[in-house]
Image (cartoon, rainbow over the protein chains, first blue to last red):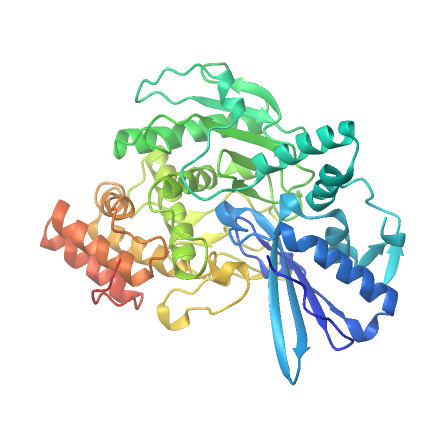
Length: 111
Length: 354
């Protein structure tokens, strides 16, 4: 199973809703979260959310026009830029992930 | 970034697994039930899976007779929902239910009467559709067991059962999974999408009695609301021209390999690059004339069912198979049309492993 890389202040998390019967870029509504703009608590909670998503990811996400949430992580590994892409099927996606993508909000106290 | 108190009631599977490991006996039983249900919702590649809801259908096993059942998901996302119309029952009066029922019948009839195929798995698989899925849900999909249709948001999309080719498209995903099982990414994924469009549009043409020349070759022509500047979601004749709207943007489909889109979005652009094989099929159907299903459709179906078609086939590999089957089933004339159709969209026909 994938493990979450170390995401420091330079990391960027990009969330988008992909798939569906037709690809319409405007409906993917990508949201980029720069960790440099987040405080420590917010970063910690996003990392906890992303760790919770790891077991939900599926390589067959999107099959048969099903929608899925794409999580793109851009981060530094040593001296180089790195990237990880996670795909969470829509029917598996935690509400907190949907809220973060939709509104850019986190649940209070992680509830 | 702000905090919110919303959305507390969703219990993701990883938490259910924690409950399974650490909860009380009652909690563990509840969590196991929920996890089992969630697994039934997950999509496993391969032949279609008969869901428990199919048990309410009478199994006639009589080839040529569809076994349809349409459910109402009642605005929720739990499948299949409440049964509303089973095979042989009269119209319900709910347009979404009756459109789905009729479209499933038209799709079954097309595969049976034109191609001699008995449903998705060629063994009479019961056709299940759920309508009114979710709230303002802007999508239709195949989940490995059944078809699911949203009502649309009313602003961009109308209900997804309005377009017969959309229902046919979803049903064809089940056929593809029973046959080649094309991997849903990159070129094989775009082929998967294209084949669903090809058979979806032929199902519509079959019902309308349209020849290749008369057909509109549009996918989802009845889905967009009047306020959207577009004629449909995809144009097989002229990919990239279906819509151009301030809200939706422009149709991103290429019509030639020279414009192939390399992207991380949409599983490598499966709904984008499908424009290329879509146009190849259109060109072949136009060149051969008459009804698209008589020759072009038959050739594409033979290639789809060819056991040598690899799950990760490229456009070129699939094109080569269509050429082989055009020669095998028809003659040099049809083979030349196939060769020209693929050449016109820039797909190389030099031999490679299918």
